Image (cartoon, rainbow, N blue to C red; front, side):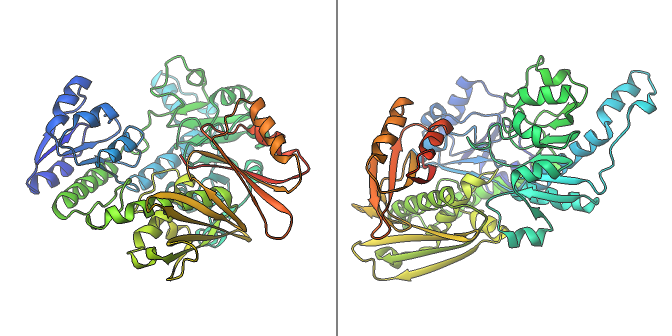
Amino acid sequence: MKILVSDSLSKQGVEVLEKAGFTVVVKTKLPKDELLKEVKDADGLIVRSGTKVTAEVIAAAEKLKVVGRAGSGLDNVDTPAATRRGIVVMNTPGGNTVTTAEHTLSMICAMARRIPQATASVKSGKWEKDKFMGLELYNKVLGIVGVGQIGGYLSKLAQGIGMSVVAYDPYLAQERAEKMGVTMVELDELFRRADIISVHTPLTPETKGLINAAAIAKMKPGVLIVNCARGGIVNETDLVDALKTKRVAAAAFDVFDEEPVKADHPLLTLDNFICTPHIGAQTTEAQENVAVGIAEQVVEYFTKGVAKGAVNIPSVPPDLLPRLQPYLTLAEKLGSLQTQLCEGGIERVTVEYSGEVAGLTVAPLTIAVLKGLLTPIMEYAINYVNAPIVAKERGIEVKEVKSSDAGDFTSLIRVRVEAGKAAHQVAGTLYNKKDARVIEIDQFKVEVVPEGHMLLIHNIDRPGVIGMVGKVLGDHNINIVRMQCALEKRGGNALLIIGSDTDFPSTVLGQIKSSSNILSVKVANLS
């Protein structure tokens, strides 16, 4: 079998493939036409971030069975296109956790002691000792936004040099935070208390521009800001203004909104801004870890049929997958819907299987629920391998319940989540044994296709609500793809669910919330 390695890979990873008997072809920085030619007869393709595995590349790969990403990010791989072709996509999440956290702490130290500026001064022949007054990190407050694997490890490093850590992560259970020695606070309080702020969240519509002018105005004068997560989480224009006025004393980036960053970017003109070219994971150890890891995963897939680290299929026997696949899709959608509806750190998840589905191997389905729960809130890829581990690390208790009675349905999956001081449940089934439907959201009986953008409005059941909502959406040129209204058996309230092919802007949500008949408004993206 031919394995094409199209980006630089540690030699240890190549050796793992060769020892397994594969023909390994290492050709990096290929022009598109040469890549299309080389991938045509490849059984496996291993990349890092350089190669763009587009739909065109996948279409040209006539024999391709697996794409392996040495690292966690999959922005350069068209996973849906690969899935449609039956190609397994796998990655190595966690291989660069330590390295990225260490790089973040290094950036903090460099900012605090102005090391890059002092180095440049000395190299230019100067000895400006009085110019570079530094900041002692001992007893300072580090604010971490997003306590995933990287943010969690950074908290340990910071505590090791005498810093105290406050953190904001609405999905981290309080018990887990206490074990880590981290004080959980609301985002505004973190802004007020932290001397240094580091972001470690995925880039989503909710986190894009999370650190902006309004947020900076709430921070301590002279705060330090570091971003080694994703470009775009910090509004770069607002940061330029704050650095110029010294409202923000210094900032350090490893990532930018647009990469490679342009030479005339305003941030690069500022003396109190330091940066690196997206090298958070660039250490010998991390690159060896991810190279060996992805090579071993590819070998295991071809020799044993086990898709460890797969992001688009679970590691289950091939003969069982066709029957499980529709349930896997349903389970992941239910988990994703839950995490977008509930508030507070997730403490417990109970998955109840009723009817025919209870007779199947349900472990992969529970993992699919966890994958759906965790994917919207983590800064790195969640897959069928690491979802249970991440849930355990975050202190989430997971329970499975089976029942032969599914009521009016052949099969039923119900997901109950306890988060904060509230509990929510959603349930779903399959129509025609393949089409996923949500049939229950808390106390409401519904029939919802779990796809696209959804607007869920809990309202008092009074005339005019649907008309008001329709007018607001129409005024903003938002097309309603589907709509459903469900009523409580008792209580006089209703749940209006609207599906659209576009997102719902905050201005729309604000107008709808302003009505006295609206109890709550939530959005979910199940694309």
